[in-house]
Length: 335
Image (cartoon, rainbow, N blue to C red; front, top):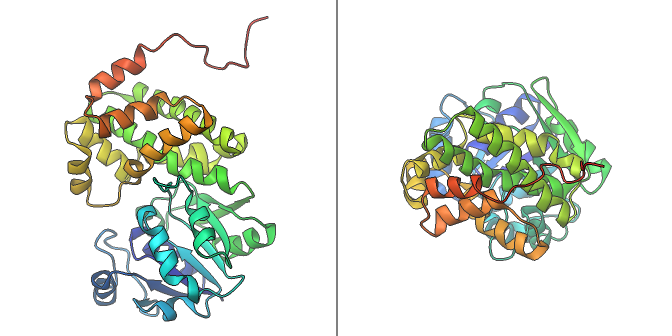
């Protein structure tokens, strides 16, 4: 049995806490939000994850020391915009060599750093790993089967974390390509906004399939230019996560996109979704990275123009459809 703390009391953290408890571990949930901790203590469930009950022996706390000290692993389930703040707050309590697993997704807009990069910068004494894949909290919390990937700098760390999480409903693969995994996880949220916008415009399955396929091409194009592995983008943390985020009723990015496609601003959409919409925060960062690495991201570029420049969704689709004629796979040329 391991002593595990979930840092962040949102729906994903709660789902993982329930999973880890079923695996026989001693689980603590920490949140910086007193109201959230009080809700979890009183109701033993999160309002964003109704029906998923916390066992009574899962400790819910807002005390930093109680959450961090003496734990075998710290699971960072904090929205990307708060990752650095929480890491700074807890850094001095983290013992040298402690394992930290980041399960959130995003890119920091002002630094263009991945979340594991932020954690390594703020908590340099830690052994930082990541987890990603098709894994909506609503389904993981109910024990529905899925498969994900853990990425770490050493095989030993990856296998240790794999052992903590592996169960009959939660299959865990391991990988050394942390960068590729994180880029796939962050950028798929931007493409999911595009997929939602298409749904909001009333487009069909053909449109969705095209967006997923060409969106994955853009993610891989940028990811490979930055040093990620092609195979990672073909796997669970790449195309697997992209499919579920673009198609699922649980996807907050898709839901926000639907509202934007129906005419809302991104601020109005985020307010109505009432959850963090990571794709909005990652969209600008993606374009800055595209400029830095000299790659084209036409779908993600149009999403940025819709979000931040007032472009109509219909105009963006028209511009994408009327781009210059292209070869789909440049390496497959005629003799």
